Image (spheres, rainbow, N blue to C red):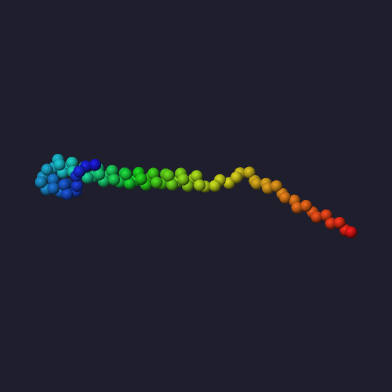
Length: 81
C-alpha cells in the first residue's frame, strides 16, 4: 500500500511537481483498487462457503419406496359356550 493521500496529489500538482503528482495518483488509485478487491474477495468467499454448507444440510429423497412391514393384529377367537 502506498503512503500517498489525495491531499498529496493536490500538493504536488500545485507545486508543479508532475512526476510526484503522477506517482501519488497511481498510489491512491492502487490503494482503492486493492481495498475493492479485498472486499470482493471476502464477499465471494462468503458466498462460496454459505452455498457449500447449504448443500450439505439439504435432505435427499430416498429413491426406493418405503415398504413398512404390515403389523397384523391377531383376531380374537371367540368361543361360544
